[in-house]
Image (tube, rainbow, N blue to C red; front, side, top):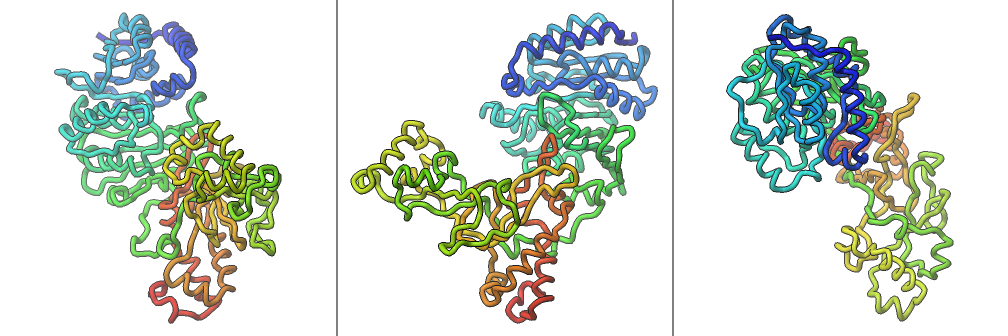
Amino acid sequence: MGITASHSTEELRQQEQTRLDSLKTAPERNKWGQFATPPALALSLARYAHALMGKTPVRFLDPAIGTGSFFSAASQAFGQKHITSATGIELDPLFSKTASALWEGQGLQVIRGDFTKQHLPEQRFNLVLTNPPYVRHHHLPAADKGRLKAQLMRSLHLDISGLAGLYCYFLLLCHDWMEEQGLAVWLIPSEFMDVNYGVTLRRYLTEHVTLLHIHRFCPTDVQFTDALVSSAVVVFRKAPPPAGHTARFSFAGPIEHPQTEAQVPWETLRRSRKWTQFPATTTVRDTGELNLGDVFAIKRGLATGSNSFFILTEEDIKHWQIPRQFMKPILPGPRHLIGDIIDALPDGAPNVSPRRYLLDCSEAEERIKAAWPRFHEYLQTGREQKIHETYLASHRAPWYSQEQRPPAPFLCTYMGRSRHGKHPFRFIWNRSQATAHNVYLMLYPTGPLRTALRAHPELHAHVFEALQRITPAQLLSEGRVYGGGLHKVEPKELAQIPARLVLDSIQTHVRIEQQLPILFT
């Protein structure tokens, strides 16, 4: 018997979705990972699945059915005659009750419960069409993580990081629910394409199934109005990848008519650490090439635990009579830097506005109380705010001392947005004695490069010029992107950028090959 969804039922479903969403606060829905799929997007993906399956009779599964948006879309896309069975699983009792009331009369079996705890059905499914819950790892109890990791090891012999979100477990555990040659269409966060804890998912997609298509939406085109999540559609068949297989990667626009696309060889995917570089490229860089991490030690700027308390103005220092030996110059945030070169004042402080100073003191509180009573009063205001009990401060001795981050000659901003052609990241030449907090990455020259810069200080200008010539595409290919177009780059990611521009700049301007034997081999 065929199944279909009437337009009136879909209209009622959308009304019920709005009602149910209003019953939870945004933080509550974030904890549940409940972000409703826009109806137009659900229908677009259902039609895409129909184009791949044709007239094959459909046995439909959505392991996170919600109110049934994907069942409704599949019914519209495939038509009444082609869906022979349909199952949806939903943990939230309000949503499962609503889905049952809406769709069970039209053939959808709704199972209330946790998908990851369900027994495998006798009959497998040939179409999985779903938007799984986006529950971040810190909302998953340790016991659940242990259980899920054990399940994956038994079913797929895959180990997964404890940092993985619930959607990763959903996708991997669904493997056993699918029949051979079955089609899966998953709408998930695109973060798995880059992050270290996505390696298990990437391995699954290259070794256990035939990856057909990954479409990544433009980060500024956020699919969910209530979540800043950059999304991707992952399409695959449950079958080993054939010899010479290539997967379609596309970016921006709708999945049916993307702005850019390319076929990426399976071997390239298997070797690549980051998949967001596709479709812009279809090759993997030579791993023997020297990278920035080979010539710089790259570290995040220091994390204070409470910038509002530990980073002070001149007026604050005078008001609390804090001795100058406990205050270090520190750069303000990037938005306050007019230029990309920070010059030094006679005392080594940066010639910037506003001027900021970092509190860093190793004296005992008893000594401070006796010698500098106003300074001690300031520390007591921190205790009243319980700053000394925060994670970072409580792991320092004393709690008002800081981790060591000496001034770095070169900096890179940690995050930014690529709007109106603006470069999301900035390289900065720090000619002052100011340190930086964790909105910057700090680049410390190492080995032969450090030796060369000490012997030839004029080389700093050429190194800085070379860093500025690193293209946005290079940085974006190694960094990660979030909804709304927010880009971030971590130290290990920046370290993967090729260093050839830096090395060529040095070789061009000063012939010091003998001093840099490692860099010029």
